[in-house]
Amino acid sequence: DAKTTQPPSMDCAEGRAANLPCNHSTISGNEYVYWYRQIHSQGPQYIIHGLKNNETNEMASLIITEDRKSSTLILPHATLRDTAVYYCIISNTGNQFYFGTGTSLTVIP
Amino acid sequence: GAVVSQHPSWVICKSGTSVKIECRSLDFQATTMFWYRQFPKQSLMLMATSNEGSKATYEQGVEKDKFLINHASLTLSTLTVTSAHPEDSSFYICSARGAAFGGENIQYFGAGTRLSVL
Image (cartoon, rainbow over all chains, first blue to last red):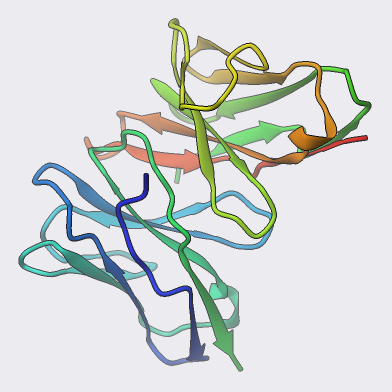
């Protein structure tokens, strides 16, 4: 079963930062936080992952709280192409992924 | 990034026939592949985990005799839906996990196969 809670939907203005929260209060010490997104009728796309330190790559930043019970994915300058369903997944180094319902992000022109 | 190819992207078949879906990791060796199913407006549901050279592990409620999985090489896994019925119509997605990228395992997903059973 999914061990994450995400808001079902969010809107973001084009060009602004999109901050997507995820609660994972039952995360264990060796479990990573993974973020993927799925654009309609496509396979999920890997965005970023982390264990306890904040991470940044060319797509996004991942902020993990000190107690690791929640995290935030930040898309620094959202574009219309970022409209998708975003999934936060907790897993032990790539073991089985149990997807939750995700957050449907709509970027508004 | 790593590329996972899934074929076919769309298949229509008659009820009672079998359909085979291929999943290939193109630029890395996948020690483990996963198969998911997604119904409209729902999230992905894990069906099974496939390790190269061994039998697949199925999630609870997934019929192993209906959804045959073969992972004969480090770059290829197949899912065969046997005796397909309309209720098997769904979006099937595979993913591959390799140990070669930065020492941490990431799942890379195929583009999915849309199965319609008439």
